[in-house]
Image 1 (tube, rainbow, N blue to C red):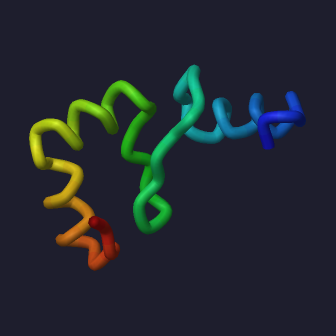
Image 2: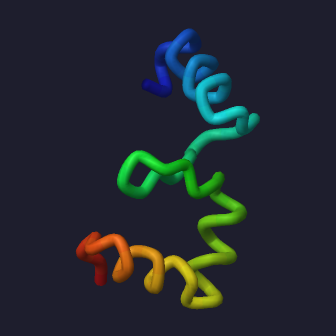
Length: 57
């Protein structure tokens, strides 16, 4: 994916988000690295994963 510019651009267009990496949970776009990091630090990411039944450590 990183080696193919067309795929990278397609992902950015699909999500309407300008950067990668991007996090999707159960086919829902959550955000980019900055949002994911903030969610992790606040505990919101673990709550979301628990709510959606996604295993995590």
